[in-house]
Length: 139
Image (cartoon, rainbow, N blue to C red; front, side, top):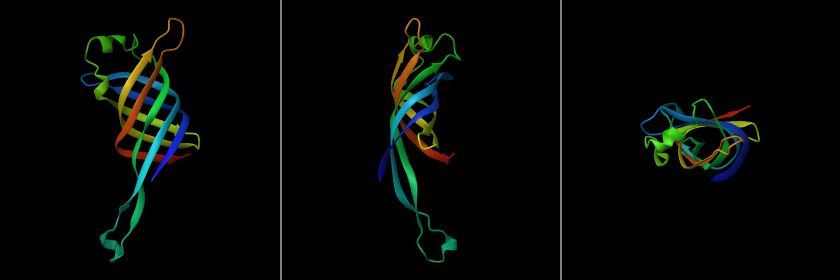
């Protein structure tokens, strides 16, 4: 089972291979596909009864926002030195859905595009797919 979810806030801390934090981003908008499935959770205490529960299997989509300039200069040096490999980029992603639900997970990040106009904010867009555990919290 899958559902499309979207939001207008969140953040991401992107890490590249061979470097510490490459940059952080404040997300303006994101759109994701939430895939879920039913897993068997039967345990010894269930006395022969089978129990199943729905679980989030994968979260994938795209996001855009603004690079937070914690690391000056904005990661141009990281990209130009060759130590940052966007194809192996991962990071902590927090997405806040329009329903008020927050999803936190480690994600693989691809198609990173950074645009730095001369007199405007530094924007970033990227695609992501979750890796491992996804925490869902309703606020």
